[in-house]
Image (cartoon, rainbow, N blue to C red):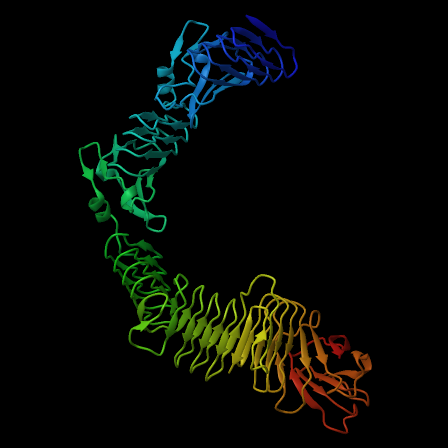
Length: 638
């Protein structure tokens, strides 16, 4: 017999094929008994002990630290040299590892629940012996790991047996795994997973907020002290896939209940009442209220949902469903099946989803969205009959004013109304038709044709950090920063949150800079320029005249600049405008010979006088806000 005695350092000892005694003493030791019937004592510190083959004995004391045992073969024993069985505060099975916790230490046993190919155990510790003579067999251990404490426990059953798991108090997690298991979380907010097999869940009125996740088998929830009348509310949750039962201040949440493979087949009450799926559905209302409701249909039936008043969200689920939004601004999801969606009053958004759907927006400004289409869609709002969208079934659209495309190459066409067409991702073709339309191509190389009316190209919401550049004089593809777009019959442009450069053409344009430091150039025509947030520049570089007077609605003397082209404003030198070349009129000031730029405070008119003396009439170039404290510093000649 070989004996090894360590010191207070971190020692590593490998025993012989015979019977060894290995004492690690202090430090974090690694002790390997190899063959034979070994006695291994890690001592204080966080030790790892390998018994190897043979009938091995491991000596553990109360304050030894965190120790690990890995054993293979033989009949093995853990001896707690100074501990009673009552000193063990928790016995936990986590996957195939056994954990025992006690004051001043913790013991982990690797693979204590692993079987070999012959269904016999090679890695188990057969006995745990305590200083008062108490002995725990592996059978005792296998049951103790199924019993929780007053704290928050994690309990795991076995794959091949019918287990009973009790969490008691605390927020516990119980996993039954295989077999027909019984799970009782006790008080606290517990998470119960039966796993495969026919499982039973025990629930009491005061248990708290519990969650069940089950897959397979014929499963039962037993309310041990509750009548069916104690259930105050039955509802759907998690987008209609899950079930929520409310009773008193407690709740039971059954994940994915409305999918057949995850269903609890019976809810049994203490008075003998039994609810099945049909009873659950009978307690759920698919009709809303005057408030803002969220209603879900079922995944396996044809449902009728009615939101009534309020801003409601209705989701039909699978099946051929009929949805009525009612009054309010509603969101209707047909989901799977051939659905009928009626928005009713209000500005509604309708998602037909898969299948051949009928969408009627009703009164208000209503949107048909194809964000979840599986391919590019073709939608024409001028068609009153069924149309093959290509990527989302054969749909019939009525009283729809706006269309949103999806992730593919869409073709969206408006009608005589004022439409909003949004392409989304992909290379889209947007045709506004008649009316004053708003076209948003989105990411990709898009074609935007406003058609008749006063139409807007929208670039609000482009990819983060992208500066938009749009020139309405160009009829070919131009790099906007959000793709190479072709713009036709577009009279207005709405920029992004970043630093945009927007240029108009010869018609009366409207340009919105929105956020960022933007450059707006109306070009010819009486244009409306709106800088928005940021330090914006307004460019004047086209021939002056009464048909070329731009309106700047939000000029800021502290943030914005007016850029004047020297080729047009020939009396001015390039660079910052000289102070004596700017004059404010309307407060008693008198124009003198070098006053070339004139701002009238009472009207907001900005004019250019080429000779600076008034001999030749000044030409108005813009309209700004009234009463601005403008100076020559607001101008730059380029």
